Image (cartoon, rainbow, N blue to C red; front, side):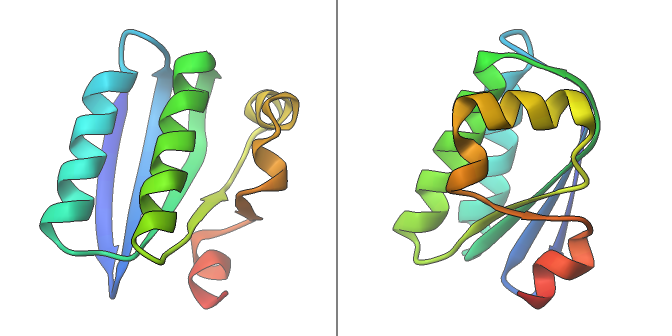
Length: 110
C-alpha cells in the first residue's frame, strides 16, 4: 500500500495505491488522521484510482473519515474509482452518502 497526501487550501488530498485491507488500513488511518487534524483541515478527497483491492476494513476506513469530516463541518469526496472498488462502494451503501467525482479538480470545485 502506498499513500501520498497533498494539502490544497483546507482540503487533504489522499492518493491510495495497492491493497486497502486489514493488513494496511490501520496504518493508513493513522497517517490520514494525523495529517488532517495536525493541519486543521476541513475536507478530504480520496483518490482511489490506484487501488486494486479493498475489503471491509477499507469500507470502515472510509466511513470513519466521512464521520471525521462531518464532525468538523467538512465533507469527504471520493474520486477516480475503478470498477472493482465502485462495486464494493455500491454494495456497502457508501455511494449514497459520499460525494463521488471523476477528478480531484472536480471535487475541489464543488
